[in-house]
Image 1 (cartoon, rainbow, N blue to C red):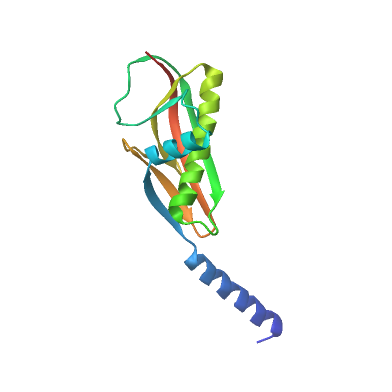
Image 2 (cartoon, rainbow, N blue to C red):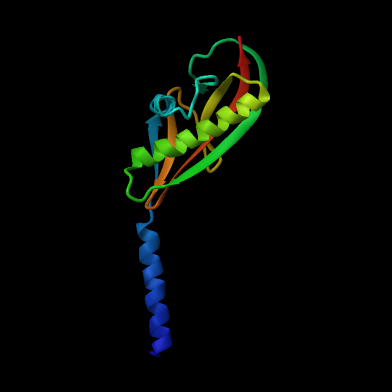
Amino acid sequence: MSMKKTAMVALLALGVVTAAQARNDALMFPIEDVIQMGMADGKLDGSVKFYMSGARTPAIASKLGEDTSNKKTNGVGKDDATACKWAALSALIAFQDSAKQKGANAVVDLHSFNKRNEVKDPSNFQCAAGNIMAGVTLKGTYAKTK
């Protein structure tokens, strides 16, 4: 075998090993932990409340449209829970900012929307954790509650 072919075979083998070791775990974490973290850090101000799908919500006066927030964070050197909570907090901050612009005081029917797969849980969100990245995609409806 020529040197060129040997190098090509070695690169292909390395690619197969690397792909086999790639990780994309779907993990669930409590959204309340993220909300408390955001409030403590001052990144969430409490003016917009978040209600997961299936959770008890106050009466809704009006719905102001749906939205999706897809956020990722570097997972290197962080445990999965920390990385996932940071990504979720970034998504909640984006929802808070948009809700204020729309005149909403809540985001209701909030649920995970990873790779267009809806995961509805009244208290937890789903995070895709890999070797170097963690990502959270949330979908929800802006609302004005009574």
